[in-house]
Length: 140
Image (cartoon, rainbow, N blue to C red; front, side, top):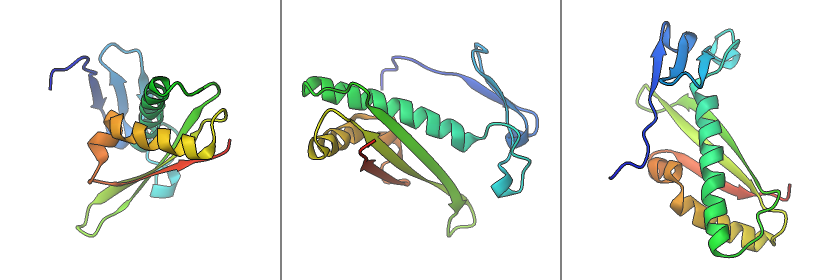
C-alpha cells in the first residue's frame, strides 16, 4: 500500500479509563468504560470512536459511488452501531450495523449504492471476514 495519509493517536493512563488523543491534539478525549461493561461511563470509549469513524468513512464511500452513478445524495446519512461482546476463545469481538439513508433515490437503488460503498469503504475492507457487518438501507 502507498499511504495517502497516516493518522497518529496515543492512549495514556489507565487504557479504557485513561486519555486518548491525536498526535496533533485536534482531538483529546477522556476515556471511560461504558456502564454496561461495569465502568462509570463518563467518557468516550473505543466502540464509540469506531462507530464515528465507520459512519463517516462509509458515508464518504457512499457519496463516491453515488456520484459516479449520478445519484442524488442530498440529505443522505449513515449511522453506525458498534457492539462489543465475548467471543468463543475467551476474548472479545465487535459487530457493526450500518444504517444508510438516501432519501432522493428508490430503496432498491439505495441498496445497490450501499452495497457498492461496502466494497469501496476502507473500514469495510478492513473488517470483511473478521467481524459481522450488516448494511441496512432505511427510509429516514
